[in-house]
Image (tube, rainbow, N blue to C red; front, side):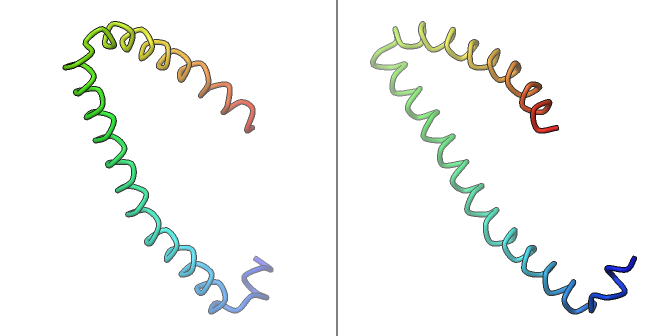
Length: 82
């Protein structure tokens, strides 16, 4: 409570508004980049499956391995961050 007693409320509100402004400005651009990357990935997979269908045979095990590695990595990363 001593922090709130010694710090003016304007300084606290100013800091919170700067953080909120950064969030409001960065999230839309990052979401747009994510959606664009997903559409690119789906387009690449569609073109590769039409012209080089053998790649799909390789893609399925690689995707399965990627999911397995993700499930292995996330819990260990959480434990390391603690």
